Length: 560
Image (cartoon, rainbow, N blue to C red; front, side):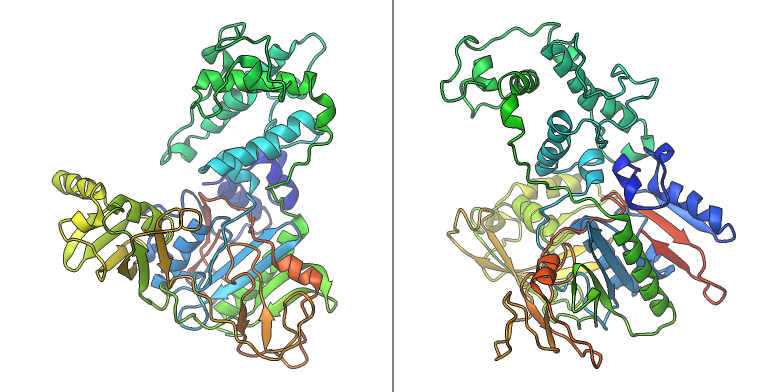
């Protein structure tokens, strides 16, 4: 359910400025039909995790082409493809880096056979349109708002898109972030506040389809939070901390940094900090270094990866079997910018495609069922509609068809510690966890543990057996100085992000073509160490189905 942002325009060839704010899937369909009018394409402006996109839906297709940009959605599609026994072509780009991998049930490793590192960078469309984590808000403030206020104001980003719209409620300046000579700092701050927290939110709400199945944000304007002229409260504003002469907290008399601020206090700090930065700390602004968390895609990389996707899709449709995982490098290695390798075999310890049991260390006398559901079942295993059983006893279930007394019973179970459930969960218990939509089931062996390291194990839960990469084998291979092997049979693959390889782990390749030498230079190693896939779609993903492939294929294909 992704819409077009201004930052999307420079990295692809289907969208134009007039399309900003519209559905990516629908606009892409219209653009493609202009030069291929004889084909049939069905766009879905919806969430790929909606219940109607189930296993039967996926069984319609000969191949699934994935272009998602978040781990949860990728896992979901991977499991549905496994259940439907439909080949999956995974892909992603970030800057000059890219990758395409093929996953075929029983023949190659699935998307979840290897560990997935937590992302350190975030796609623009996620943090501007559908932020779901605190870190998204921090990145938005640091990399978009701060850069717009104190950087090059002429550089466009998604904060001032359509600011020239005649119906804009943010005073329709050529650049809303420019301060006019007759404005005082409070007026300027209020205008910025109203634009980013009010007007931009109203624009986002104008796309009704986006908010059918998610909580709508509420536009905020300074007039609704503060009086016409701010009055300083909670202390003497004339006194400031000697160590922080330009502190908004000190200026407003907010002395306790541990206090939880209300909306009014947050608004006052925002406006005061903006004024102080421009009036008292202007010289420091040029020296501030912002470590960017947004990696913008490059149209050339996207075009290369799109071509590789098509090549692998054709192989799947022709049942060629000679699939390749291909990595785009930023710097040449052995005069190669593309590194093709054969897909790896399924990981026998993978709980998704090999159904290997997991083990969980947990304090069964202290942890509640809710902790297990939120931190393990949903966060770690990526299940959306879990069902949890202890033997034959059903402890928890999610579904629209549940009766009221069942819902009340499961809700009550969530607040009980594991050892006090109707069927007690203690050390040695085997739990069965299932997601009916994904048709994914796994068994979890419970190990009771009293103490945990607060820093290394803050959740007081340790899940093992589900992301174990094959052990590294020690041998006499020479190193090229960065830990990568120079052997033809081994290659150290470091995934861009949500990809299939574990950082720093070596995996045995089935076989390399004769004469193909793979030497990972320092540049290549640095390239493969990047960890975030940034593709054309957001976490609420657009689906586009092609009704047929050529003359000989009757099934549909699907691209995301």
